[in-house]
Picture: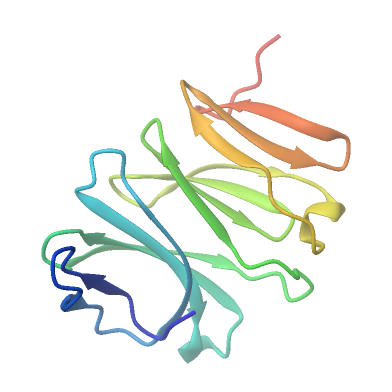
Length: 150
C-alpha cells in the first residue's frame, strides 16, 4: 500500500514518475499492451468510504479517467484488479465490477457472494471473452459483456 503510485525505470530502479493524488493505493494492473496502468485504492478525502480506480499513461504517469465505487466496510480483502477484453475488473468485497478500460464507465457488476469478502484468496482470471471468479457456490465464468449465456 502507498499513498502514491510510483513507476520505476527498469534499468536503474529510479522513480520515473509518481501520482500526485492522495489515494491509498492497494491494487495495480497494466493493460495487455502495457500502455496504461490502472490502480485502485481508498479515497482518503472521503474518509475511506469510497474506492477509487484511476487510469494512468504508463510512460508519462499522466492521469486519465477516475471511477468510484462504494467500499464495503466489512470486506476483509484488499481490492483486486485484472484487465482483459476491454474491461478493467474490480473485485471489491462481495462484488465484481467491469469498467470500460477506455472510459472507466461501469459496464456491469456481479454479486459474488458473502464468502468472497473473507480471508481466502480471490480466484480471478480474465481473457478470451470470459471472467472467472469465486462465489459461494464455487467458480463462475462470466462473459466479458456481462450477459450470461444459455
